[in-house]
Each structure stands twice: as C-alpha cells, then as structure tokens.
Length: 364
Length: 270
Image 1 (cartoon, helix red, strand yellow):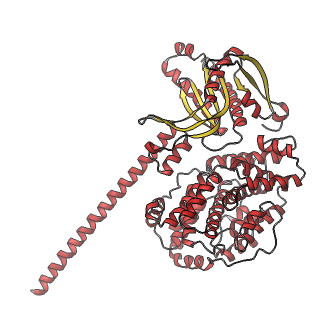
Image 2 (tube, rainbow over the protein chains, first blue to last red):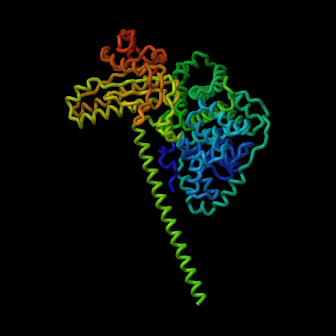
C-alpha cells in the first residue's frame, strides 16, 4: 500500500555506505534490530551513535507516556516529510501487528484534535507548531501545554521528543538516506512471518528511563540546555552527543560553532546565540567579524569550508526536503563524504537544540 | 423433515448473512474509492492553489485547517519588497503574435520566479508584465535584503541567457527593471470574501514599484533604496544615483544601482 509520503521527492543518496561492525553491533545491542541507516553515518562516529542514543524510547523518558511519544514521533516525521523516518515508524507499527488501513486510521485520528484526550491533543499541537513555526511559537506552545494540565517535567520530555525527532528527520533527509527498501519491507513475506518475533525484540529493548545524575557540569555551549535536564537520562545522552561532536576532527570546532550560530540566529533562539557567541569569541573570532558573518553569511575571516557551511546551515532552518537535498548535492561536489555527513549532523543537531532551547530555557 | 427444514433455514440464514457481508464489502469499497477520489481532487486543488498563492501559505492553510473566511489576520512584519517589470513590453505586444507573445512572457515569468524562489523569496503576484515578490514575509528571514539582491542578480543572468535563446529564434531580446525596498508593513491573506491573495501592504511595496520606474531614467536594471543599502553586505558593488522625485513621496528618492558582487567575493565562488 502506498505510503502517505510516497509522492515526496527524494534524491538519490549523496553518500556511500560504509559498513562498520562495531557501530552496527552497538546499534543492535541497544535497539535489538539492525539500523539500516547507520552505515551511511559510519564515517562520523559521534553522529552514528547519536542516531541510536537520542531515541527517546531507549530509556530516556521518565514522565511522558510512550504512546504519546510515539504519536509525536509519527506526527513530526509526517510534518517534516522525512520519508526515511516515516517509513521506520510505519514499519514499527506494522511490526506491532497494525495493518496499513489501521495505521491510516491512527494517522487520521491523530489529525482530529476533537477525538483525542486533551493532553495528547496539546502534545501533538505542540509537535506541529515546532515543525511549522519553530522557536517563535514556543511561548504560546508552552502555555497551551500548561493549560492542558501538563507539568514541567513532562513538558521538557515532550520538547525533547520533538527535538530528537526533528534531528533524526533532518539527518536522514539532508543526505537522502534511501528509504525505498524500508518502505517495502513490511510487505515482504519473511518479515511478515517473523513479525511477532520482530515486535517482541523491539518491545524488549524499549524501556522507561530512571533518574540519572548529571555527573559533571558541561563546559561547552548548550551547557544551560543540558543543565535544564539534570536528573533526567536525557542530560547525559545529550551531553555525550554534544561532547563527541566537539571532539570530532572532521570539521573544525570554529566551523561547527559558526553553523550553530547561524541556525540560532535564523531561528531567533537568543539563549543559544548568546552561548555560541561567547564560545566563538574564545575561538578568537572578534565581535565585529561575528556580526558580519551572522548578518551577511560571509566575511573575509571565513575559510572556504566555513563560507560554504554557514550558508548551508541557513538552508536547513526551514524544512523542505527537496531544497535541503538540492543544496546538499551542490555541497557534495565541494566537500569530502565525511565532511558532508558531519555538516548534515551538525546542522540537524543545531536545529533540534535551538528548538529545545526555546522551549525549556526562559529567554532573557 | 425437521432436519431438512433446519438445513434450509440455516442455508437461508447463511445466504442472507453472505449477502449482507457482500453488500457491506461493496459499500466499503465504494466509499474507499470515493475517499481516494476526494483525496486526489484535494491534491489537485492544493497544486492549483499553489499556483495562485505562495506554497507556504497554502500549506499553512491546509495543515491548520483554516477556512478562508477565518483566515488569520495580517501580521506586522519587516519585509523586503521587489518589483520587476519588462521594459518595452507594450511595443512587444504590437510586434508579436499573441501565442508567441504568451510563450515569451511565460518564459520570462518562469525565470524571474525561479530566481526569487532560489533565493528564499515568494512571488506575491503577477501584475500585467510585472512581478511583485517578498522576502521574509512568510517565514522570518534575517538575511532578506541580501537574498533579494542576490535574486535580482540571478534574474539579470537568467534574462541574459534567455535573450540568447530568443535571439537564436529571431525574437527580440527582453530587458527588465527591478526596484527593491525594505520596510515594515502588514503581511497576510487579504481581499474580498470571494477572492483573497497573499499580500504585503506597506510603503516598501509602493516605493519598490516607483523606483523600478526610475530604472528607465537612470538607464540601469537594478535599483535599491537607501533603507535597503544600509542593510546590504558590503560585497555588493553599488553606484549612487541622483535623487529623483517619485509620485506619492514628498522628498526626491536617493537610489543605488546594483552593479554586481565585488571581484574578491566572486573569486570565492559566489
């Protein structure tokens, strides 16, 4: 049966897959099943691990009901038109024994706020607003969640589910990770026969989070954001991903910071912009140069890769798969495979973090 | 006898049940076909709407389930407005056959629209041979001024390439005039109950249209206002033009002709 996103145009994949046994077995250990996209991210290990570690159902949620989190993931992936993530979500639902018709009914049900419990409806409305409006709508979204009786802890988890889905959507969309085989998989006979077993394995690997202390105060930009999740398993997961991103040698630290700064400016996330601006100053970039870069996406201080990537970062802010993939294809002629993948990862993470920042941190 | 009667009753019951099930299944299939046809119609309608209003606006209206009568009011925004016009269009209408004229003009519209969309702008409307475009109207865009001038330069290049095609067919070349200004105003769906369009109302649109007219006087193709120049990247090469009076504005308006990007910036692959 045709998926709702079958008509979304999807480029041929921009990167070559590179099998990596260690990463693949890590993913299988954590999720129970192979993660088909992992080999495309293998040249940038922090990103490959983040694609696994930031899945909310793997022990990151303590307060939000898993069914609401699943609904949010489905809705945000649909909003963002990420064929890959949407195909994964549909496959999970098929593994749980749902027919295509039933999945369609669930989607229709989720689209009709009147049929849903007020808390679920408010959560879904929040997911949609963050995809469409971004941080600009955070204040109203927070109020709507509070009005529906959702507490602060649960709200932070909702924001995390939306941000992590947004990250996963972008990181699969930008390099056009192939989705066709995943879309067909649920209809294949071996998969249909093994469905109960697959479902059993998937369910066995999903678990609720437990209070986890944040062992050390983070020093990097986004420290306040990670600190806002102190006590939750989300904090160490986020902290480790951000730490590993800074440590990765593929793109320079300054280049990554510049990409983050452009996205923070484009999304109007003042808290993120402030922290990143300070970090860039520590990297030796003075205030006038930073102002020039952020205002015009260019400055004599930029090297060739930075110049390409600050412009690319800006293109990732508003989610249009065809535009994202077209821009990434242009970029692929000028960057190495690992550079392209890391650029996609940094831009995707920055978009998720800025949306998260606007939601969980009060702006000055 | 009793067994036979019971069997007949059972068979009749089964037949009635099978008939009911068959009817229900047929109805379901009919409803499903109707639903699919309605979905296809809606998709066609969405595609058609996308040609009448910026795609982002249509998607927001559909996704939010807003009836046009309840469409949200206009929002206050700072937007960069661009007005593009064909120079010498009236003479062209006299020289070309209508069918040929439509083909030539559609080619011009397409190239201008592509340049606008490539640089994150939205075509607001086609006014005769003119095109009104906005940058930063639908989504916030802190780089809207640079985007608008990049789009104007892309149009210049696209029309130059189009002219080479036209000349190879023995057709007259096209020339365009572009005016760009930036300022606050109201953006949103506006119009009567029967017909609405996405529009931006503000001094910037009027001034962009007026200074587009000045391109003939200054014999240049792209003019920007002082307000826009103040926000532009220093990498654009601008030439100041003498102040000229324009209709509806008390003071003569200072404009700048856009020559291009400085060579050092072009060497960086722009």
